[in-house]
Image (tube, rainbow over all chains, first blue to last red; front, side, top):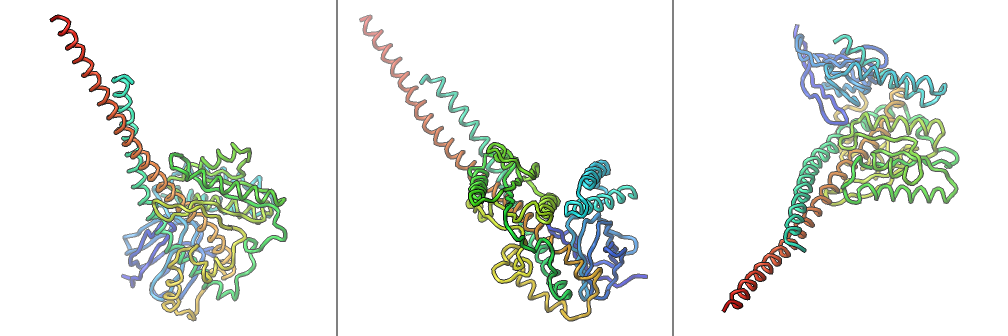
Length: 137
Length: 310
C-alpha cells in the first residue's frame, strides 16, 4: 500500500544532503527506534548515532550513517539535523576500530564523573554505532 | 654580470613565477569552495537556534548548564589559536600568533595563568618555539576542516572548562572579510553567553545573519502553540543543543580561517608573481645592455684590427 509522501530535509553543518518527498523516515532517538510517517504529531526529538533510512517507496530506500542530531516534525514536513552523515559503504571498519580503541583508552584514563569522561563516552557510542553498521552491511 | 649569468637568472626567476602563478590559481579555486562552505553552515546554525528556542520555551527557561556558568574566579585562561598547516600566505599565521601571545602576556601580567590550544601546524610550532606547550594540538585538516574536527576541539575545551582546568576560553582566528582582507578576531568561547544562544540583538552574527528573519518566518509556519511531543524531555534536549553552539562557533571559525588562508595566500602569491615580473623586466634590460655592449666591443675590435692592416 502506498503511503502519503511528505517532505524531508536532512541538514548538516556542511550543507543540505537530502531534500525530497519520502513515505517514511526511520532513525533512532535517545528513547528508541522511531519511524515517522506523514502527518505525524509535532515532535522534537534528540537522535543518537544510527542508520538513517529514508523510504522514498517500499523498495527505494536511501541509507546514511548518521551522527548525533535532532529531528523536528512540524505540520507536513520533517527536518533532520545531524552533525555528520556518511554513506554506509564509505565507513572504514578498521579505522573505526582504531578510533574506538582510542576512545576506550581515554575513557579508562578519565576520572569518574568528569566532563572528559562524558565526552569519551559520547565518542565511544558514536563509533560503536557506526561499527555495527559496517558489520551489518 | 656576465651575459650567461643574467640569462640563467632570468630563467630561474621565470620558473619561480610559474610556481607562484600556479599557487595563486590553486588558492583562488580553494577560496571559492571555502566561501561556499561558510554559506552552507548558515541553514544548520539557524535550525539549531530555532530548535533551541522551541525547547527553551517548552522547558520554561534554559537550565543552568555548566558551560553557561561563569566561574567564580577567572585565574586560568585558555587561548585557542586558529592557524594554517602551511605558510606562504603572507601575515596570515604570524598575525594570529602575535595577537594570541600579546593577549596571553597581558593575562599573565595580571597574574593569571594561560593554557594554550592551537589548530594548524604553524600555530603549534610557533607556540613550541616560544616555549609554550600546546595542551591541545589539532593539525592536518586546515585545508578542509570537517565538523568532526570542530567537535573534537569543542569536546576538549568544554571538558577543560567544565572540569575546572580553565575558567575562560578565548579563540583567536582570521575572520574572513574578502579575498584581500582578513580580520584578526578574538572572541570568548566559554562560558557561553546567553545572548549567543537566544539570538538577542547584536549576537546574531555569530551564527549567521539570516537567522533572525528565518526565526520570525518559521515561528508563524510552525504554529508555535501546537502541542509538541518531546523525546526525551526538552531539558535533556537542551543539554545537547547548547554545547552544539560551541561546536558551531569553532567550526565557523575554522571555515573562516580556511577561507582567509586561501585569500591571504592568493594575495601573497599574486604579489610574488608581480614581483617576479618586475625582476624579469629589469634583468631583461640588463641582458640587452650587456649583449649590445658585447656587440659594440666586437665591432670595435674588428674595426681596430682592419685599421692596423692599412
